[in-house]
Length: 253
Image (tube, rainbow, N blue to C red; front, side):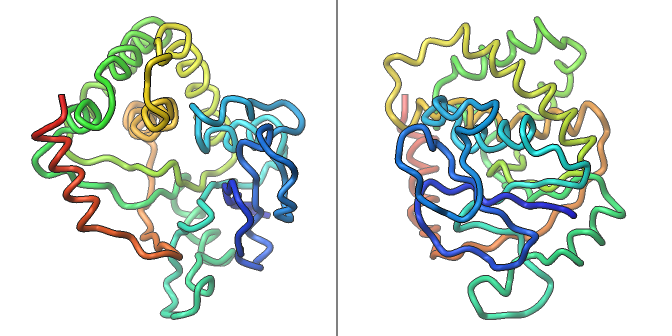
């Protein structure tokens, strides 16, 4: 059965559908929240890296410990893939087992719609929002470990659109291949990037980089995917987000 894990760092309400399973991220830093699912500090894990790797600690846990051959995915405690049904209730709008399996029968990967920066490339937006050194370190890691990905790296970085959020559902064989590529690259970046003076937000660097890395992997391997709308269980302050984006573009560094 397909399983979509819900990354959460706090007690929250979750969909009751058996398709979904909560996973507590950064569990090494707190007592058991009793979310009703699993914790990312059991088995083989990188829970202690959560402050820098964000929801990647959940992805790593799934890769190493959840051995089902069925498709797997990740969403967030307040952000889900939207069902095609027109429900106004909080979780009735979540993608159902029937819907996700229908999508996966046609496409090996399900992702959210791309974010369009319009006036900014993916690389430019990252540099204005975070640190250019992060992108440089990733590029160097790709040159060293998988240089055949460089053209895809450049193509994604020069685009104005990209998939973000580290949300997806994948057939298991694709998920495993993605993780086998993703984590060695991030380990290489980690070895060569000094984040000791980063702010708490910028120190989440590996989570931020991985959001952009998904498109590099999809592009290089010509993997078909389908985009599915998302919804938030809490309001999104879009005016604030847009103001922050423009501020980073024109004022930061």
